[in-house]
Length: 100
Image 1 (cartoon, rainbow, N blue to C red):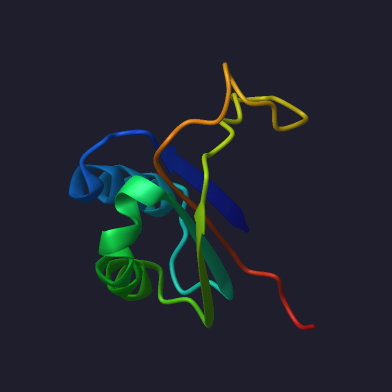
Image 2 (image 1 turned 135 degrees about the vertical axis):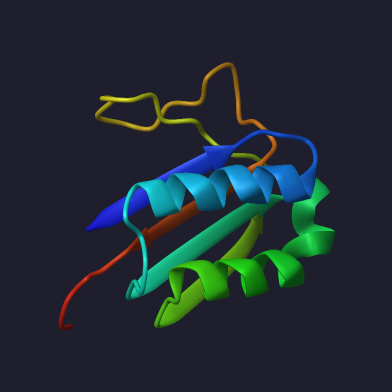
């Protein structure tokens, strides 16, 4: 199981809500690994975002990072290509990787 979510909303709380909703709709709950990426405009809220994602998807491991921008993956695409350049926003990947 793996789920990804991206929001380019400029308001951090709304971006986080969009991303969380996408993860939950995809069935991401009690996952092994969650990776949260935010752009600089959302970095100040990173501790709050991580607390929310920790409660929502209950990951065993939670990794967070601040990036210069996000590349948006279109549905059905086989590779990540920036649509007109990297965009600001919040993104998350959550999934179960099984035994390591």
